[in-house]
Length: 251
Ligand SMILES: *[C@@H]1O[C@H](CO)[C@@H](O)[C@H](O)[C@H]1NC(C)=O
Ligand SMILES: *[C@@H]1O[C@H](CO)[C@@H](O)[C@H](O)[C@H]1NC(C)=O
Ligand SMILES: *[C@@H]1O[C@H](CO)[C@@H](O)[C@H](O)[C@H]1NC(C)=O
Ligand SMILES: *[C@@H]1O[C@H](CO)[C@@H](O)[C@H](O)[C@H]1NC(C)=O
Ligand SMILES: *[C@@H]1O[C@H](CO)[C@@H](O)[C@H](O)[C@H]1NC(C)=O
Ligand SMILES: *[C@@H]1O[C@H](CO)[C@@H](O)[C@H](O)[C@H]1NC(C)=O
Image 1 (cartoon, helix red, strand yellow):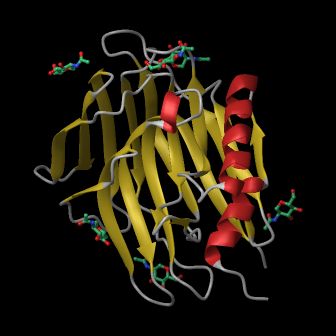
Image 2 (image 1 turned 90 degrees about the horizontal axis):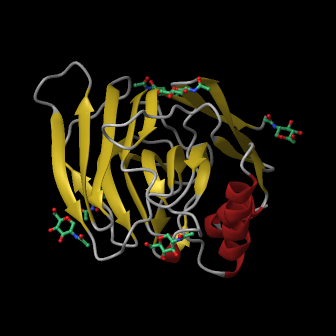
């Protein structure tokens, strides 16, 4: 059978499964999933973990991960983004989100392009110049100063000088209501792209909260994943500073 990749991905998200202690977060995500079936599939989360609390809880997120060897599982190009992200749920008006991470574009039986990026959605993604390779350890930090200004920091761990430190602002106000460590889709041409095989991404040093106050780890965060005919994505909280997101291909 031959499916349009947009339809496949929309279907994948429509069958998302969620597990976690925070019912409101689950409802938000489920709300968004049904929303995406009738629209052009807004930014979607394949897997990851989210802390969600009141507005204004988060102004800081941190995480470190080793760059996976991302490949295209299907006979088509595919995409994935590994990021730390603030907001992006329906609970923040407009689904506004702020993220920094690494995007992967896996060509069919070809090379994979690796690109550092930040994004204050719905503003378009901005590329950062950083020579990232498979196996590098990437350190990500996201900070907001208020609801429309922030800062991203991305560094290749252990490589002094190989980092980017960028101020970011937007006219779209954030809520500081949720913080997450995620593997996400990339939206192209108004449609959803096919998920690339990222095997397993493990975040360590995962913490979030308010700068200058006690931070939180991923214990107690809601996890996101999905089952599909082509494969599953599952998220495991390893301990209070680490979580793993895995893609299990069928067959
Ligand atoms: C990534 O995986 C592919 C397919 O298994 C393999 O051919 C390639 O050598 C791997 N690349 C790296 C950098 O490990
Ligand atoms: C960002 O980088 C990606 C991958 O390298 C590229 O396809 C895209 O065109 C770039 N975007 C901009 C705005 O330069
Ligand atoms: C947010 O902070 C920036 C930098 O400090 C400032 O220029 C801007 O006016 C602030 N915006 C709001 C809405 O407070
Ligand atoms: C959270 O903040 C947003 C934007 O500042 C606001 O529109 C929304 O009503 C707030 N939500 C709650 C529950 O306070
Ligand atoms: C997780 O770690 C944070 C500090 O990073 C701490 O404040 C919190 O109590 C820890 N939670 C648990 C359940 O151990
Ligand atoms: C995906 O999840 C479904 C439902 O739990 C399960 O039946 C299937 O074996 C899983 N597939 C893989 C590749 O793990």
